[in-house]
Length: 148
Image (cartoon, rainbow, N blue to C red):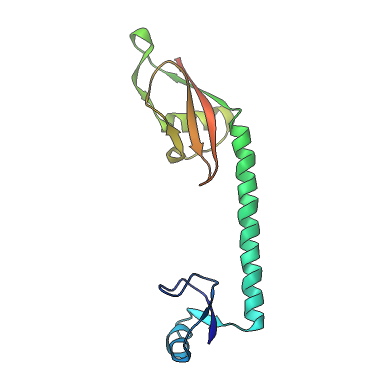
């Protein structure tokens, strides 16, 4: 019996997959638990439309993230910190400090967990930070650490 999965079923497939299952398994387990629906022409068409809508939404999101990455590449963030002798900081500049500075200076909210620093920032100077916007897309910003 041909079925369309409504949820992921271990050993069978993911949501939206069209599978072939035995008559008894389908009638006694999958259908009563609403794990699958019969693969009629109407249902197959509805599932294909849902899949195409999801793909369109993902593509639109990816395009928006690419635009945001291009804008973030131009951004320079200034973080004012207290320093000791020789430009050494008391502590270090963290991802939270950079996130707060992005909101304060540019109005851009980025979660601190998405900001990666290559090494801890412990001196005054200009550094680069990588912001993970998407699994495939990241942007690099300049972080200027000054005495303040």
